[in-house]
Length: 175
Image 1 (cartoon, rainbow, N blue to C red):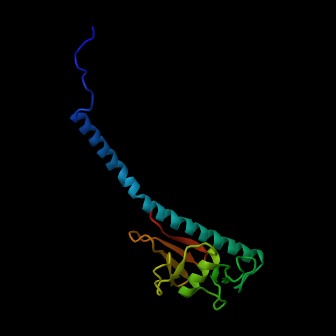
Image 2: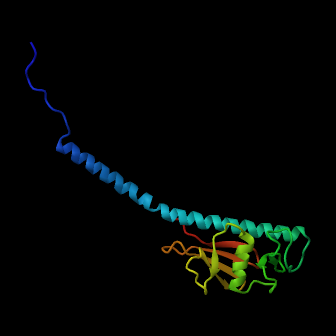
Image 3: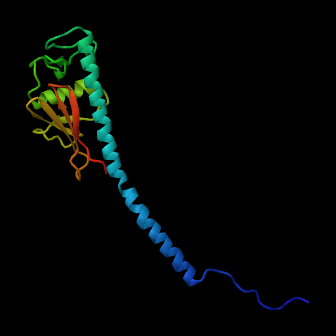
């Protein structure tokens, strides 16, 4: 004979459901800030990549200037890019318009950026023009260009280029 007792239904108790909800809340509170910082990580990586490309471009330009045997300022160094980048007396890029033997204007900073980085580089404009669509704004102080990154409004990120020494640096705090 079969046992006629009704089967006991199984399910989650309210306590078990509350425990699961609390655990999910704790996990999301711990993980959510990490996902939020991905944007800062992306900005940091973007600026770091361009700064590295700029440093490599400047070094390659200087190597080409040296390989050609130049020892003074040179207009249109051949064999680098499209051949329109000009060098100062120490062999570092200063413009593409042959109007100066030294970097001295924001326009020269834009020319150096475009001449060294060439095709596919982020866009740059002068800080005075303040092109809202430009990725970077260029400014000049003495012989140093500063390129201010515009996509991250929360953190000041810059790339600097010193034409007297070829040094590429900047301010790009890690998130």
